[in-house]
Image (cartoon, each protein chain N blue to C red):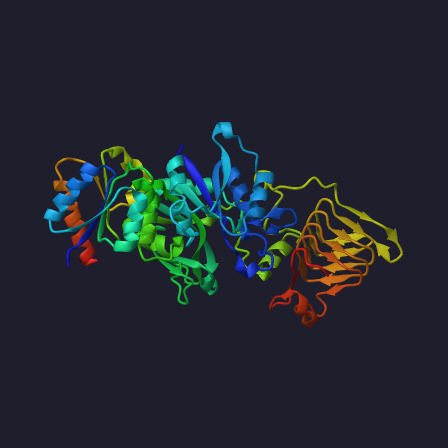
Length: 122
Length: 401
């Protein structure tokens, strides 16, 4: 069965890019436009991994991260943002990885693969 | 000078102190006439020059909030000093605190906001006098990520405490929660090191430890979960309470039961109490309502207002009654011909004429009618009041008699 990745991203262009690129890697993709939708997706569709933007309307990624690990403490979460400064936020340490946004998705894809591997071992 | 933030866990339900904890959290339970239990921890902080303090509350917190607001509004905000009370507010997660570690984790944004170098985690449940500066100095000197304050106890008490196992250099190598077979102190086979629930953490070690704990199968408790996990990867040391004990007698009490609460109170009326409240270098601060001084009235045959071997707080009037070996909180009245022995009365208790009371704790604002006897017929008392295994009677707050 395909592994499900939830992409949480408010910018439509990026969301579509991630969706296409990750589908090509063989994953099933769910999407959400903000933290609140992400939590709804988490509860309804049980993704295997979450890629989480931080700066989003309605509910931002940092806020969502606390709620996500409160609901499913084992789910791997990758924070994905243009702003490296959020690394200083204590809450960001609750993510399994922190990837700065780039048009080259190699780092992000590698992290996704690593974390899904680790999850299986666990 | 390192930036220190104290976080006091003040949410304890104190179920074994029921009914004293029916209306208030354990840290807010009155003690020693004029104090609340949390006053000892707060006084330790101020006397240790720690003036950035948060108390984390949860259950039945109104009384504690009021006490801190009335009695502890004494720091200077412009100097960056504060005593803040933070109720459980579901900032991170939609649940109440799941354990001591979760209580701090749920307040991770407060840590973020303050950005201290070290965090001192305290319990608001204990009575002791300790200079936390000696512990913080020890922590820094050892280059520790976490330091746990410990107290030597006889091994027979092991099932009441978290037991810390150390090597010769006081580095912690194990933790047992209330074990049957405790690991004893190296070179002291009859002694164990009990955790006092006092921790000094490097902030980063704390935050990473809390997050790892939040993301694990866990009871979210500092003793059971955080310490065992951290001793694998961090330098974790035990601090000997004797090095920081400001009373000098190793006095530390978790007044967790009615009997322990009674004994700890009664110690204060002995000639030389183990807990010295008279040290001007280590004052215990509190809030006292502005009552007039205590007084005794009436001196005539059979009707002499007396109080012997007792603590009498402001506002009390011993009016022709007789009080022995007891502790009276503010504004207690003892009317003529009443006899009171070995008892603790909280604020506003009124004992009517000819009443006879012994070995009884009476909570606030209870009126004892004329001629009532309590503590003399325990089977009868047990029909109306709480009676402990050792025969202490407890009359709850506002009870109508």
